[in-house]
Amino acid sequence: MKNIEIFEESKKYMPGGVNSPVRSYKDVEITPPIMKKGIGAYIYDEEGNRYIDFVGAWGPMILGHCDEDVVKAIKDTCEISIAFGAPTELELKLAKYMCTTLDNFEMVRMVNSGTEATMSAVRLARGYTKKDKLLKFAGCYHGHYEGFLVSAGSGVLTEGIPGSAGIPQENIKNTLVGQYNNVENIREVFNEYGEELAAVIIEPVAGNMGVIKAEDVFMEELRRLCDKYGTLLIFDEVMSGFRVSYMGAQSLFKVKPDLITYAKIMGGGLPCGAYGGKKEIMEKLSPLGPVYQAGTMSGNPVVMAAGLAALTKLHDNPKLYEHIEALGTKLKQGLETIAKEKSIPLVVNRCGGMMTMFFSDRDKVSCYDDVMSCDTKLFKRFFTHMLNSGFNLPPSQYEAMFLSVKHSYEDIEKFLEAFRSFEY
Image 1 (cartoon, rainbow, N blue to C red):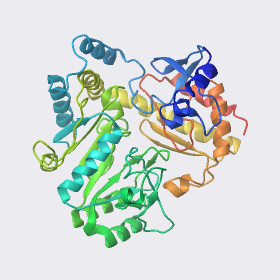
Image 2 (cartoon, rainbow, N blue to C red):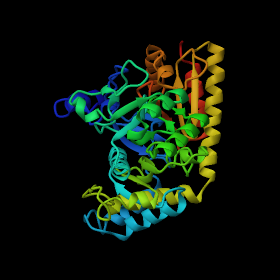
Image 3 (spheres, rainbow, N blue to C red):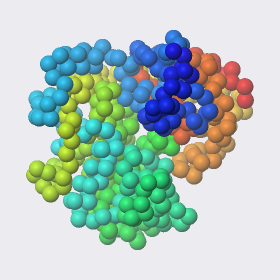
């Protein structure tokens, strides 16, 4: 079947024809290609078209599609075990590996998704501090848990409004929305609500409003305020973990979090998540403590095997990150040069293997308000041009592109050539 035939048929059985909204390509008004195969840096649709992939399953495929070591681990494991809902040695191996190779990660609880990791970390923080309020930041996405789907109100200090239908106001009454990279704003929030704040959750390198790295002074003040008021600092590294470096985004700052959440890369491409941190906090989880969280498929042996294979390969081969850094530098510099030559309003933000092209005439893009000034119509034309040129990019101005170790300098040159041919 052709892409459009499969998509139209899918609409009969799945809302919008998809199982996750952005896949519908609604914002760019294009029928999405229906993917069938992925090898290395390339993916192929049902019609046999090849694309150089800069989405990478939205981040997990840092080793490229169907990495041979990850595939072997999956095959070897699923021949003897798929699921037990019982303890296995594989979950011990991955837990021990993460706790011994990562900073500030003394104990871990495995879950099945990034959303599950972040919502569980917040519950744990509330149970540990015996406080209720949560501070998140406009533009940061932490999954579809009701307490996170909050839109900022009209004031600088806001208790938020529901960001989705189906969420009662009372379910988000304890969620505050702050301004990313705004030091004065967080001081005001803590001054008014500090005694009630159980936790602050932040993407230290935001990826869901496009790639924006938190500023050092902002992070240092956030840590200071959390310490002053007995508030836990949660780093959401679902996207940045093992991506901007093996140690993740926390390695980019002087401050350290109390809890960290992971997903995506740590599952080798399979559904996975985890949250962890200081032992004294993690021991509040059931069965040791009063904070309940459970999951039948948590620690699934096939997923644990895939994750262990992926993390071991990344940890033992630091040159893989050097390769991604070199490619990212070349791509960013090339895009900026071409944009200047063609007078295209463009700001390129990159951190490790994460990058976003913001079509904006601002000098920099460092917060949600900056992102909202982007020219989405220009992005739409750019996206269509790149898709027709054989590139799979995120179909939204507000998402991150991802590099893998399987991308080559030739792939980067082709990307730059395609951008140069874009008719602005």
